[in-house]
Length: 157
Image (tube, rainbow, N blue to C red; front, side):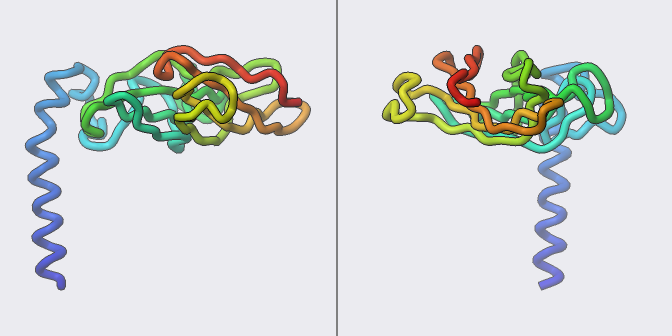
């Protein structure tokens, strides 16, 4: 058992070494000291848990809690990145930003294949917690453009 685990660990280490040059060629920030080489990381600043991973039209979408203004918790947005292989990521503009209801906390994302929510066939739908001065509320946003632009569903109080 220990031998199998050792072999598996060595295989993962070799894979990591083989994949590292591909990252460095794609973007300069992967050359930074201490930058993750296999796991996703934002271009800059603080990130926390993933809050929606969905596959749609050839892309894996990763949404994650992100503070685009600093390296510590605060001003929570949903960052957005896409990948075709779950190894190489393309950063996209912020998906969801704080508004009058508060910051964007944890949630999930799904594809509404049959328009059951009424936003449109194959809408990408995000269900998440808004956290503001008045407390926390559950909210919905949707995208009809592969997650590139979002509209808040305003009928939830």
